[in-house]
Length: 89
Image 1 (cartoon, rainbow, N blue to C red):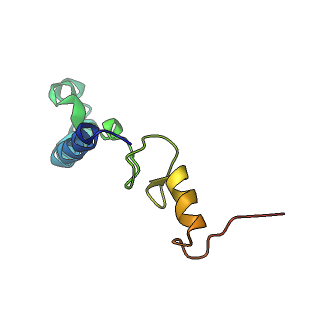
Image 2: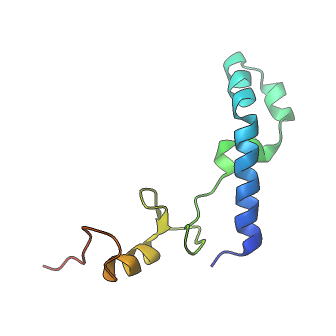
């Protein structure tokens, strides 16, 4: 499980990205890279990391469900995800 501080940091970074998104797009369109360098580093979209919404796990996440592969498997086996079942052949 990710620490609470990591989760809160991701939330702060997401707010910062939203705040500077329009200005960043404008600077990129102009080609003003000096102006881009003056913006906060964490305002870049690539600094956001997808975390599992249930466990906070940073790796092995499914974008569609926004949960990790482990949590997805547990939920599928419990029957909490409609239409998903364990495959067997």
